Length: 590
Image 1 (cartoon, rainbow, N blue to C red):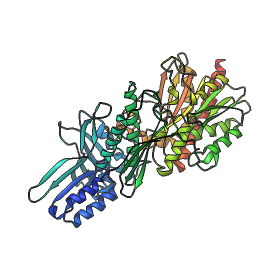
Image 2 (cartoon, helix red, strand yellow):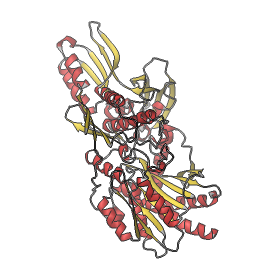
Image 3 (spheres, rainbow, N blue to C red):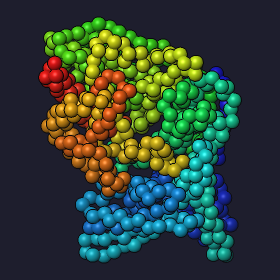
Image 4 (tube, rainbow, N blue to C red):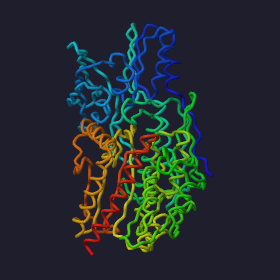
């Protein structure tokens, strides 16, 4: 274990109070934009008032949505909301329209008119609101959105939310300037320490790089689906993907490369009573097990623990085959032989996408009751990530936790590469697919995935997640179909059978309709092929194995209760519909 840094930071809110809630500033008016939750800002405003300072403390992160949550003037009801949103050339036309998400879902039946407004270089971006009440009365408001343009760790210019301070005293003293907050300073310090460290030349550079942050504040639930404002979650995402990008560049790879193997990058953001602290150290890989409590197989309201998964696989039966993970955990699989055309079923490639794990197990249990069924089932292809996800959800159960997405090597198991000497490196988890294909010769792989159930942001490097722009807000349950040349007809027949079956789930159809409508208001046209109300992407990919792969994508990070039941019901039905369609298609081709 090596300690890189253990540092506390002065809290910006405390510094402002110590500096300006004083007799010297009595009678002043103060506006500040901070990375603090509403409760902390309201409490500080009261302390300023007690000192004779008229203070208004605004959220630096999503200030428009903060206004609609916190300000009495935004409570409505309205018949129309006209929003002029800033367009800054360096950030792209859609940046602040996305940052206004999910406003369209928060204003009830009111009409939302979105109007782009160009921002002159060097000018603070602002939102302009016109709120129209039922009696025709209008309220016009201007909401600043402090941002600053700077080069990030990847060498790209990014426009990012930032703190700001505006202060005016009757004696003429004025302040109007950017305020680097503790939130920003902590992130930049973490990046500086890690990027300056000598990691050597060989991957992996570490077993676990643990970045622990203590940070005050609480999440704010929004009245739209699973949406939430979370500074803790946003910092986790920012640290994780920024560090991946640093190591990608360091290794000479392009940004977004998924074959990088730096080791396990683990940001853990914990609540505090006011302390702002950063601890970075390297640690050995852990070997604990994901220990969610046992649940009814077909009515689960949260992910399954590994003990239950082992028991369910034993009940499914068939021949056991196993691979090993980087940390030494087993990748469990079963092969049920029958006279049907074989199908490979897998879940948990990205281990924080948990509805696919449940759907794979459920579907396999139902198929196992058929005497002729022929399939392999590997429900948790990434057990190291699955255990990490469980660890992180103990303290932050509602967060996406993308640090659990990839393996303990830090790569996406589907992208395991050859070494520089031309030899195949250790396959670890990826060996399970090689074995499943070798055992069955299956031409169909059902690969169950998920994606964020609420908005995904990176507020300190441009707000919109670089390389994952398509995934930033939910758009319902959708399907990705990949096939070899000459297989398109069979693949499309399979796809339409699956969408037709999914369309029989009214709750799922309603979820898709809601999320797609909200997506298109804030993110623009979806651009997918729509089949039975489900977005679909179909592509020819000659290099993939086997000939046809159907990837499911459910907005499941992180949902529980009825929302989780719907998620794994959709995954289960997709598997069963695809399996049955495949039997008909391939029997007809024989």
